[in-house]
Structures are given as structure tokens and as C-alpha cells.
Length: 375
Image 1 (tube, rainbow, N blue to C red):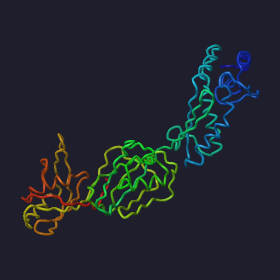
Image 2 (image 1 turned 90 degrees about the horizontal axis):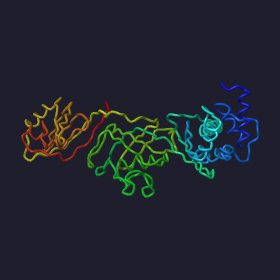
Image 3 (image 1 turned 90 degrees about the vertical axis):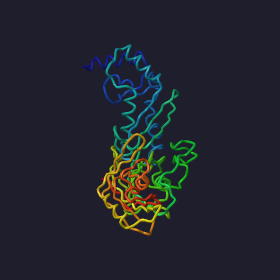
């Protein structure tokens, strides 16, 4: 352990050999933050005056963050010129100084402490609301950049209009990353369920490139009713982080509700049940007896072939209603991801299937989603 005499001797040696500011002297005399009472030199051998620019750097951080981002926690990082590290290493090697705080750590500790005092926000080393990067150039020019942690929200939507796709194609210029051409949405437009919701959320949270995780999907010509289809959306670099109320989106095409409270996207595949109403058309007239045979599908297991894999889905309930001689409505409660068209037609060796059970070639004309329930 270094005693007071050794510390004073080292201080004198540092002063004798090098022109150092009090920050750079104190860093080599004690572990941790602190200044000595000596006045700083105009030109410090190690930092070249960088440590005397703390208030200037804090001002630049405030300009970048304080009136732009909503946040409760933050983390500041920095990139310094290699020459600064080399000069510090030179002194430590010459005077055999070991185990002391580096200039980078001292700078960061000072910046974080000052920013905490100014903003009344807290440092978070694991999941900060906003991450701030301070890049110092060779001439001590300072560039500050900030980025907010991704905000994940959950919601559900009802689709009121046929012909609207669920997903939007990606922007051809950036392939979904977000650029000036697509107003940082990553999308080719807003004519879809995804596009309508993304546009509203980007405006509200001042974020970029939303990424959706859907709990299932439906055809472009399908409607979605009931409680709606759940989804999760990740918003990149949101300036507005704290939503006061749930967001309601009501357009002629959709009605959606996004919860104000942040969520996490489930890591494992989401298990869900879907209630679907299917309009089926048969090649020939179909009888009531044929339709009664479909009740055998209650609690049935259906196998679908997908390339070289066999996928198994379960039907939990079946309801059948005849509409006319060659049309009927089939209502299924089944596992999510149930391939409706294959199940009706019997394509790709789907077994059992509607066509085989009724002894008549059948086709799904239209299907609508009545409800989606996550398990």
C-alpha cells in the first residue's frame, strides 16, 4: 500500500518529468476519482487539456439528449485518440505505476457523475434507456451521438376491410433497415396492416424501422374480428419512451390497440389457437349427410406435409352450416398455423381433409379469423 511519503515522492517525480493537469496527477496517486488542489496546467502531457473540457462535453451531451429523448436511465461511453493511451502508458512504464485508474475510466466517471447531477437520472450499465457515445478526435474535437434502447410494445388488431395485406414489402433502397428514401420506416409504403400501425407508432414515439412479430397471419382477403390478432412491435431509437395511455388506431381498414406498457417478445414459439370461419365450395351438390361426417373432425389431429417435414395440428371443435347446394360454412377452433386451404382441398397429402371426408372436391373460397387466443 502506498503511504503518504511515497505518494508525495511520486507526485514530485511526475511534476518534475511531465507537465500534467491535476486530474492526470491524481489518477496516478490514488485509485478512483478526485482532483488535487494544484492549478491545472494549460497543456497536459497526457490529456492535452481534455480533462479541463468536462463542462463543454457535458454541454454537448445535453444538447444531444436532454430535450430530445425521454429517459430515466443512461450510459455514457467514449472513444479517445490512441495517442492519449500511449502517453499514459509511457509514464506508467517509466515510473512503474500499476493498478491505477485509466484516463478513459476517469473521464467516464466524471461525465456520468456530472450528468446524473444535472438530469437527476441514473446510470444503468445493463439496460440503459439511452446510450450516449462521446468520440474525441486527435484535435480534441468532440462528437456526441445518442441512441435509445429498443422499445417493445404489444397490441392486437381487427381487420375491417378485405384486400389489405398484413405485411408491407420492404423498402428497396435499404432492405428494411430504414433510410431517407422511406422516412426511416424500412417499408415500401403504408398500405397494409403493418404499414398503418407502423406509421402511427413512428409518429407517436419518434422512432425508426419498426419490426413486427405477428401471432399468426391471414390472407389478404380475410377479415379479422373478435378480440383481434395479437402482435409485438420493436421500435428502434424511440425519442418518446413513456406512453401515458394505450394507443387506439381506428381507420376504415383496421382497428388496433397498442398497450402503453412495454412488453417483451416471447423467446420461444408462441402457442395460440385460432377460430376460423371458412366458406367452402364443392364441385358437386353436397348433402346434409355428407356435412354430418365433418363432425368426425372434432378433436382430430391433422397432418400437413411441408417439404420434407410432417407438421401436426389439432382441431378442437367443428361447426358446419349449409348455405346452398354446393356451398357450406365450416367453423374451426384449431392450433395456430393451421393450413386452411390445404386442409379443405387435401393438397400435398393433407390427412384428414374436407374433400375426402365429404367425397367431393372442395375448395376454400374465403376464410375469416373470428378470434386468436395466445396460450
